[in-house]
Amino acid sequence: MANTKYKRLCCFKHTGIVFEHSLENITKDGSSLQVLASRCLNKDTSCDSLNCLYAGGKCDPFFDLQHAIHSDFLVYWTGKDIDDKYDSLWEQKNEPKLDKNIIDPYIDRLKSILRYGLWMTSSENDQQTFYKGKPIKRASFWRTCFTELKLSEARVHAKRFGRLGIGLKRPFVLGRRGSPIVYYREEFGNWFFEPFLPNAQGEIGIPVDAWWSYYLKSMNEGKTNSGYMQYKNFDESEWRIIYSPEIEAKLGVVSGIDKIEDKIDGNFRAYLDKYSVQKSKYPKYLLPLDKWFAFIIYPSLAVKVVAEKDDTLWKIITDEGIKADLPSDKSKWPNGSAGHETYSKPFGIDLDACKNF
Image (cartoon, rainbow, N blue to C red):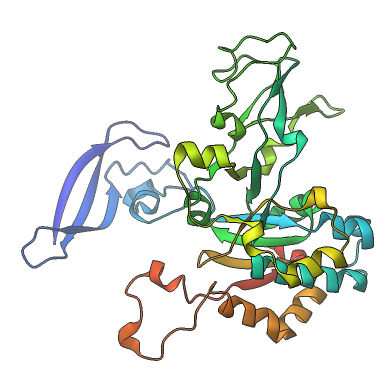
């Protein structure tokens, strides 16, 4: 073991103070060292940071331990149509009693997602956004949206989009050329739209193949009665996967995006007919789930219990290749955590329980 001293900014109170590392060889030849602890040698007893614990030469956990600024989970929400039809006032109820009529539609929705994937849809509302009061017209595209979730905020998202949440780890979105949304203020100048002048129709004339523009979204600001600004869209912390044949032609094929005509079968058509889905609402493309599928947020405890009793639901997860059973031969087990994603079954939590996290 060896100690080494160096200077670093405290980032809480001090500047240029001396820290000390305790190091340990983790290879026989001494070519690789592991930091065991980092101590502040300033010994300022007046430092009372609860985050870095520098006072009195304590350990420095913020820099020496792994920590996450953002959640590793992104959540796809669905079911607003089910709530509107069967239980539109669910959010106003003070007790967790919910209409039992939602159970079967939500179970069917979950099975459809597991069997065929997340829907990629297109909307005229997506094609147009605004900047300084002028419309920005974009070519049609298909998208699937996710939120970067804090479980305690789940009800906020569920109220707007539905109460069934499909949780996925970030690589699912990144591997399909997905990205977080960049939010802008409609009334202020920005780097994205300012270079483009309005055309004869009064629209901001950005090029039709400016695919980056589909990752821009207004903060949808507004003011409360007290005068505080609200940023309704910004609070979604949205990520998005977009697709169109033109994007594929320009940037190349991305695996994990299926055309609906290649996947639709009798069961899928029966599902669409059962719930009277209009053809205009049909998805054009599908995102099949894979090993990065991590958890399910159920609309209620009742739906969770029924889902856990449904053997066919869990059989779909293995039969469709989303997850596999861990081999009995230990020599075939993965060496790292990423390899275990294939065998990690999704966990479940109900919406009411989320508020406690």
